Image (tube, rainbow, N blue to C red; front, side, top):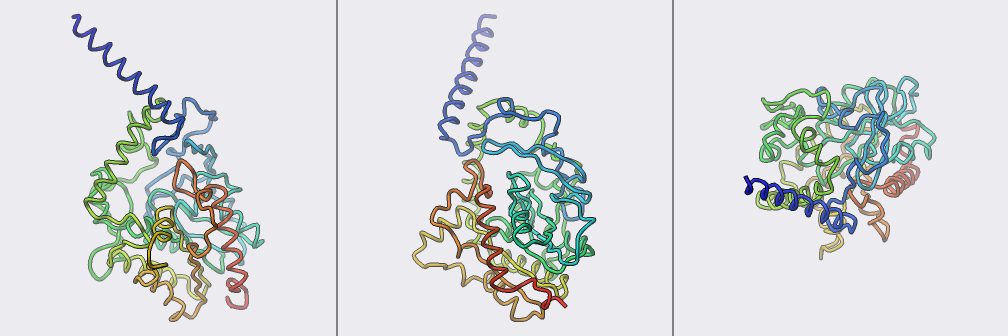
Length: 381
């Protein structure tokens, strides 16, 4: 029995060494992910974790439970997120006016990791002095889902749309081929994909897809969630997983720079979804906001041909929208409005906008709206 005792001691010593080393490396910010486990954070334990507030049961996939408040915690932020009567991260929609703007987009529109008052939506609303109904959602929320959710809620009073476009993942968010090559559990997510053939906007769902009332499934709960919540070594494990995943993506030649490397099919599907949103919007003005992530910013600055991406089909597709539309369609590329220091725009532990990033984007958007005169009543009769 001595060998069993020795094995237990060795295992315990190894785990303790890993935990202590992970603590030191995390505090030194030497991992890719340097999150503080929830066990060591100041958390309101009366408020459930955000994984209980995210759902995948509607036709558009990822969404939020109505009338709930949840806590969202990572290494560099700790915020509460509240959702209204339809599940949007916003105040009630029962008092919307005809002058309201609808915001479509993914986690950048939702305001991932920031308080409600720090979201770009709230800041735009305050600066324009008009309501902005936020239909942004996290969870790999792409253009096809934006089309579906807009068609579901277009009955709400509004006279224009702001659409956030994140090339870093919007090209692949609704790409079934991309998701079929990832973890098999991804195929169980209840979310729509572009169909193959001549009608890509007909939503396709994997046969294995399961509707969910929360994100406490294989990828978010169980042992994985326990380790993440309680041990510093979870950062070491996640570091290894990220490196392995990036290596696998490289082997599959899947785009890592959204502005540059989308396939022609991905580009055309994205444009077709936004074209359909324009159709559905009737004669309402629409502003598309193109958002570069940190990788796109670095790639563009290091490229020997400035703004090479602007010759691609997807970018040209946005430019042509205004040429064949009765309504006013404006395109704002935030890549053209970057500050000198872009690091402060993003969280240190996450690729989403920080409060500073949300404020920067909102202020650029407001200036653009004023300069272009879009969403003015005389253009929306």
